[in-house]
Structure formats: structure tokens, C-alpha cells
Image 1: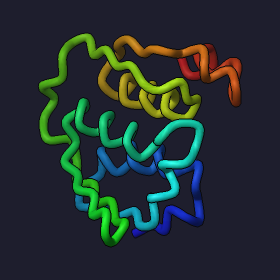
Image 2 (image 1 turned 135 degrees about the vertical axis):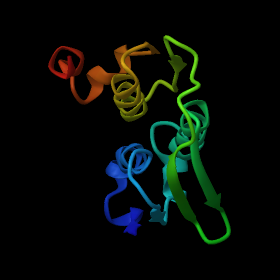
Image 3 (image 1 turned 45 degrees about the vertical axis):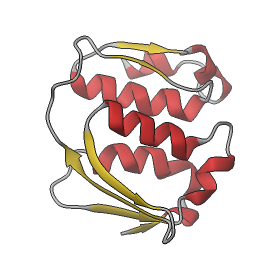
Image 4 (image 1 turned 30 degrees about the vertical axis):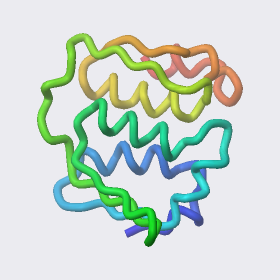
Length: 122
């Protein structure tokens, strides 16, 4: 269990990691994600749905529970478009790397925090 309010910018990455562990990953206090460069809560819900991750979001309790990827029946090569938000693009890149590649747009927004991300990540 993690209190997301203690590690605001890491929550999307923790959601990615939670998608690949055995058992449940519980992240509390994620409501704040709605008010970042994009609505990161909505973006992560879309991303986890696209990559077929088994999750629940209890809005009343503000608790996000991630179990794991249901199956690997994702279109190949995967193509994902995220909001113009550096952290969303970097988390999408993690999913694509784990799946063996794919297309991500927009990628240029990453330069806000890590201009050489693509080169270093490869």
C-alpha cells in the first residue's frame, strides 16, 4: 500500500509497476492527479484500460487498486496517444518497452523534464 499524496509525481510510474507484480498494488490518495499538467488520473485510467490491466478505482475512498495485466491481447504493434504531458508520455513509453515496442504520440512533450529521454531510454 502506498499513500500517493507522499509521492505525487511517482504515482503514474507506481501504477505501471503495479501492473506487473503478483498480488495487488494499492495506491491511496490519487485524486490530486486530476490537477496536474493533464488530468493524469483520467489519463492513467485510459492507459491501464488500453493495456488491459485489471484495476479498480474507488472514487469515494480515493483508492486505486491494480492487480495485473489480464492478458496480452493488445493490438500489435501497440499505438497509444496520451495527453501533452511529459509524465504520461514517459509512463506510456514504459508500457511500450515492456510490450516490445510500439508507437507513442506525442513524444515531444517529454522535453519539458527530460530532453534526452528517448535516447537514454533506448
